[in-house]
Image (cartoon, rainbow, N blue to C red; front, side):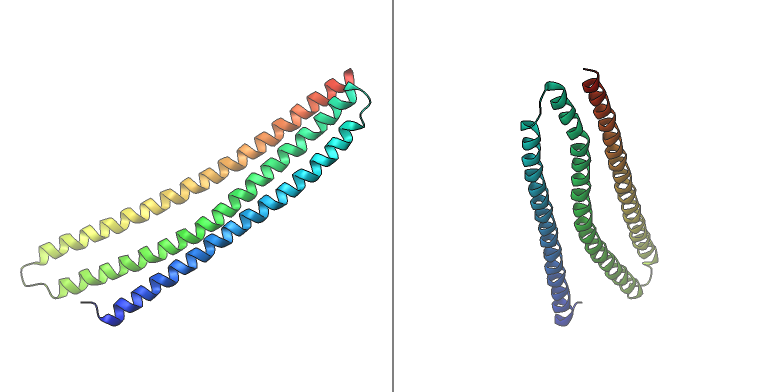
Amino acid sequence: MLTAEQVLAAHKANVETLFGLTTKAFEGVEKLVALNVTASKAALAEAADHTQAALSVKDAQELLALQAGLLQPLAEKTAAYSRHLYDIAQGTGAEFSKAFEAQAADVQKKFANLVDSASKNAPAGSETAVAVIKSAVAAASDAYESVQKAVKQATEMAEANLNTMAATAAGATKQATASVAAGARKR
């Protein structure tokens, strides 16, 4: 049976976890806002520079070369922005996962202690039922660990796919930029 002190301690720990996670969520939002402000300032400055450059071109060939020169940096900046966005989400999500795993481990430990306590106080002849309960708890624990491993592997695979996709996009943009620039030079 839980005492009032144990209930209060559990409640206090839950409130602290909630406030800790709320703080982490706000930190993630702050990072996201800072990233967007920085990206917006850079985009505005680049738009002004591009407008000035476009107004100073003398012929269509020069305009094509100017446009071709803008494609690669734009793709690289988009990939970098996506990477920063992913890193912010990953970092914030990792904090939530860590807190969830800690809470789940604590609940699992308390439940195992409860089962052990119940088995020690079980009436004679109930050894089979206690063994079945312990087996079920162990199976649930193993299943939970398997799910955690699968989620971690899926996350790592998604990150690897994101990196591959960003590299492929940057490579394709470089190739397209080179083709457009070569075409502009031929004219």
